[in-house]
Length: 499
View 1 (cartoon, rainbow, N blue to C red):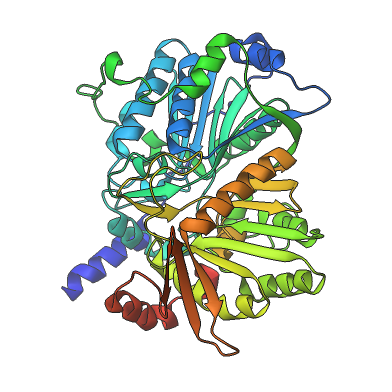
View 2 (view 1 turned 135 degrees about the vertical axis):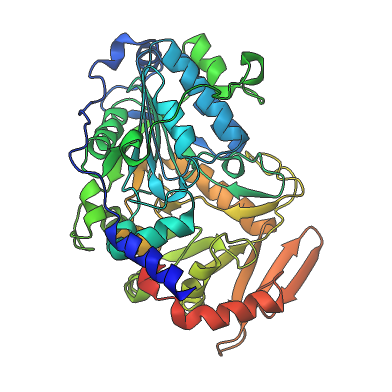
């Protein structure tokens, strides 16, 4: 056994990325106004450098909107995602993307390589179709059949592969885009039977879209983006599974599609700007305090608050600097409210270790701290029905003084701040601020545990409220003793800077 392990490690030491890869730079189209989507945007309002935005809180609406854009694109589709799962939602959406390519639409798909294990053949077949090119970002050099083998074969390259592209972006004709927290997969669109995410995206149009496309182009043309064919052997295209057109349409209301067919979009026209990390962050050579990083910009926005800060983040590990920032805000009279995952809902228990360390310091500052409950009820306002499935928080949003809003891919933890690349949008919009706040309030009321200190000590209690009922827990609620004990054992091996 030791000999096998040594052999594998030696292979890992020899695995290297391909050199002299043949790839050509391409860019977003510069004249989206001559496309149908561009004309619809121009007819829908705006002007004075304002961008059109709409919040996508429902997973069903987000899924239908992506399909609507794929079906109506005329010239280009650009997809950039941390995860494109191999499940029903992904297959349906990619079938619509393939149909767009068959109409002559140029398709560029950029996916982070961490979660593509076992999908090389799938992406190879997709990339060999006319008008479609697939690139993987920061790829693993060997052992590509499974995640464990990828890490094993990359044992000598851990500092590089630890950095990932966490962006989420879908752009049609450089005219309309969807960006925010959602990856591509059933659980992001409330289509999974057991576990679904509470998440947020934005439909955006107007001058902000070319800014998003510029960020996409930087990643697409960077030295970290490799054509899928350069990291895996070509495969025959025969047998590529296809979906009949009758089975590929939206299963919900086709919300965006009806508006596009009518030639007018319902959008709030606001001042907006893109916050985008650059691909060089993957090298680890940028300073955490560098202004080009999203984390630096978000800290500056939060620091500017005068009366109220609302934070929604699935992983919340503020670190000493974050606690110090919040202390300074509280001392100025700013109210801070936070919603994050509970141990019972998180999909990353190891990150919960870092968060749990800061609960008491945050509560001592008087911060209102909420953790998501596994069951958030039936229909919530603007949410799809979660039914009997477990809920997990995946939305990332900040609201400042009931006006300034950030929505994007950034988690409030060290990994998003220093290690992964992130993407998001800052809006000056009381309307979107009110919508995000209403979602926060709705979940806080009946879909969360209210975490509080007991007296003046360090002991915690979790209060869960429902219609006509209240219950109090004195440990992480709706978890087992084994779950809590396992995390205590792992605590010494979970350095905060890696969470």
